[in-house]
Image (tube, rainbow, N blue to C red; front, top):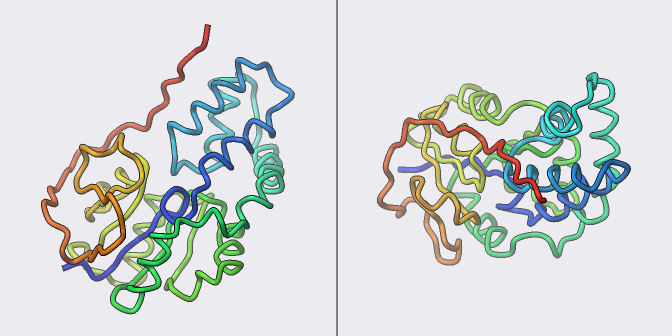
Length: 228
């Protein structure tokens, strides 16, 4: 029986992929159009990867320029300012997810583990009064694998009773690495992995069937589609 649910945030609780895609395009607007296309494609192909990791990847593999950690932090801070208004817009909350959380938070141990920047994530949750429903809210730059491990160890959870709900390969890999269940949501490209949640309307976590334990991690999608 599932007693603990670890929630991804972007794409599961907040519909923010386009907000952040537009944010990266704005952040790197001084670069070539070809670079911007590749940056945007990488962002959409790698939900759940933190902005810190994405910025490093952009510079190393797309822009092909060196970047130090001070500049990574500066760009991440600028990115936060660009997306600030839209991520605090309550209309971007995914209503069916929010309703499920509100109706079930007393029945399970709920935690948020996200690729979103930690302080920004907590401020968003406080703004929407979501923090009331979760025992903890953790974000980047810590990696999701490590966040899952930390929660399990800190609270002494039985892995057989823990599930992660996410929309990205990084969520799936974090669940495999930590030996917990993975339920996919809001990404039909992941429909072949474990159990897919089509909707939270009327859903009860403990009734989910057909869970098959996968043990193979999937490499994150680093392929960039070049436009000619």
